[in-house]
Length: 248
Image 1 (cartoon, rainbow, N blue to C red):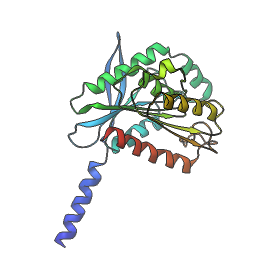
Image 2: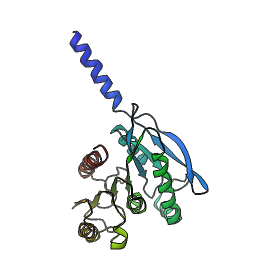
Image 3: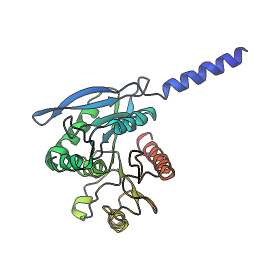
Image 4: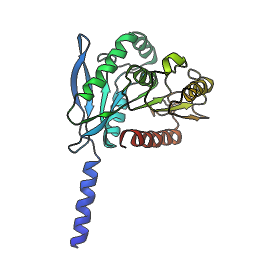
């Protein structure tokens, strides 16, 4: 009976340690502006590896917050950035408008500011900060790797790609890219060119193309394109990649 009680207590403690606390709104400087994000922190004292979590073209909505919370549950301090300054789209027309309205230089500045904010936190491992994004955010995840030479890992979920050697030379972070074979925006040919260019430069890159998936296949809100088995596989790859590069 005593052993059973100890086992139950241990299981409870392990469960609590794996659960992230609720996210809290934080502010930090981006140039002359003060911007906001939502910070998710694992239970415990740390220090922890950290992630910049970058939203889709919809904005910082509930699904992205859930991804940040899940990542905190995996042991990462996760900062969900808000490139739209509080605006969230509920239809594709507005999402497209908001995405096109973000100045590229401002977005890059915001993402570097997010990196600096995480690096300034007492409970963050300064050399174990990565980025992850989906759709528009996937492209910005790559842009973060281009802009921040000390980034330790980058995950691109069906985001735009660069192939110019002069740009890709700037990347020091290992890259995981997850893409849909039926994606008409970021095609398999685009992905293969990116992979080839990275490999020729001796960069660390892992690519997975899901043959029957289209764009945004990981998001269940994409009613027509969500592919649960591919999404589950993608999540496991993300977890393994981040652990290998941020928890070592």
